[in-house]
Image (tube, rainbow, N blue to C red; front, side):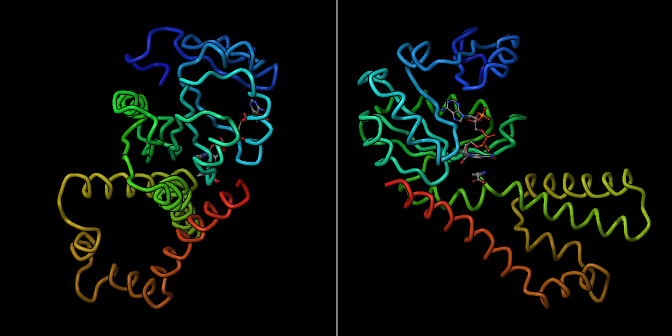
Length: 251
Ligand SMILES: NC(=O)C1=CN([C@@H]2O[C@H](COP(=O)(O)OP(=O)(O)OC[C@H]3O[C@@H](n4cnc5c(N)ncnc54)[C@H](OP(=O)(O)O)[C@@H]3O)[C@@H](O)[C@H]2O)C=CC1
Ligand SMILES: O=C(O)[C@@H]1CCC=N1
C-alpha cells in the first residue's frame, strides 16, 4: 500500500508496541512508525487494525479519547464484528476486511464490507487502497467475511499443505529437495496459469489431464476413495466456523 502511487510519500503511519520494531520500520522509506497511539491515531483519516482478535479489546480501550467522529476503522481481524468495533470505539464508520498473505506480493484477495455510515466515495477510496495489494470483493453481508476467511483468508495455508504433501511424495520417490521444490512449484504455477487463461472449470481441466485408464485417473480415484474433496470442504468450514466463534467471543 505504502509503495502504491495512490498514497503520497509518508502518507502511512504505522504503530507497533515494540520499540525495536518501530526503529526497524522507521529505516524503511515509505512510512513513519510510532510506538505511542497518541502520536499517530489523532492525525489519521483511516485506522487499519491488524492486531490479533484477542488484543482488540485492550487496544480499543487504549484508543479511547484519541479518536474523532469522522475517522474510519478498517479491521482485518478474523471474526471481530462491526458491531463489536462500533461499541468498543464509539466510532460509526467501520470497515471489516479479510485479506490474505499473498497481499505481500501484490497477489492478495481482500473481501470487505462497510457500515452504512461509510460514504460511497470513502468506500471507493478504501477499495482503491485494498486493490494495491491485489484484488478485492465487496460482500453484501458480514457473514461472507467469515465465510471468505475459510476460503481465501486461510486458503493459502491449504495450498501450502497440498504443496508440502506433494513435496514429501517427491522426496520419497528419490528427488532432491531442490528438484522436489521445482517440480511442485512449477506444477502449481502452470495449473493456475491454465485455469486463469480459460473459462474451463477445475473439473474440466482435471479431465484434460486424465487419460482414460492412465496415471492421473489412478491418483484422482485414490483421492475420491479417500473422500479428499469432503475433507477439504470440511477444513474450509472449520475455518469459517472458527471465525464465527472468534466473533462470538467479542460481543
Ligand atoms: N496472517 C494472515 O494471513 C492473516 C491475518 N489476518 C488477521 O490479521 C491480524 C494479525 O494477524 P498476524 O499478522 O497473523 O499476527 P501477528 O501476531 O504477526 O501480528 C500482530 C501484530 O500486532 C502487534 N500488536 C499487538 N498488540 C498491539 C498493540 N496494542 N498496539 C500495537 N501493536 C500491537 C504485534 O506486535 P508484537 O509482536 O510486538 O506483540 C504484532 O506485530 C489478526 O487479527 C488476523 O486475524 C487476516 C488475514 C490474513
Ligand atoms: O489464522 C488466522 O486466524 C488468520 C485469519 C486468516 C488467516 N490467518
